[in-house]
Amino acid sequence: MCGSYARHGKKACTAHTIKEDFLKETILDDIQTLIQQVDKEKYIKKMARKSKSTKSDSQKKINKINKQIDVLQNRKRRFINLLADEIITHEEYQESMKQQIRN
Image (cartoon, rainbow, N blue to C red; front, side, top):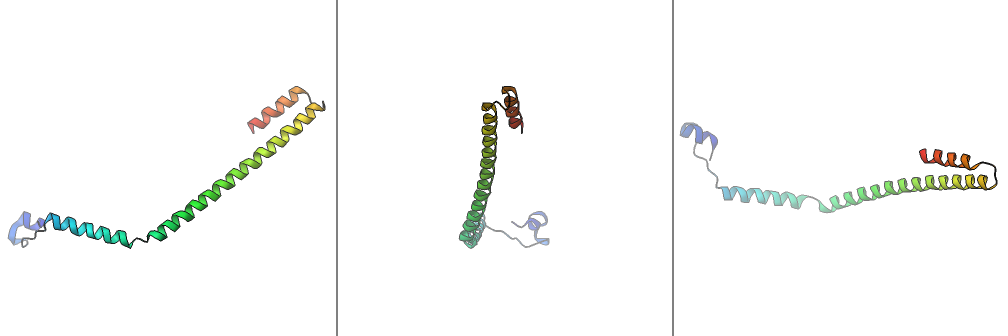
């Protein structure tokens, strides 16, 4: 019912009423029309591009970490060779390994 009519009567407004079922049906029809207008394919393509971009970024991070691992493994091999050739002591080797872990 019209709020003005409910508060002030016929002086403010004529009796305006809308049935609840009609109102619900109208709103649901409008929502369904909006849903149909949404370009689902465009949305799916946008999400696919975003997913691909995220995957690419993640792969770059993985590659960077793998390179860091390779560098550290190469350093460790060099220190092991220095230790085996008795160029450095066991204590120097252990200290070098501790430094690499901290970095």
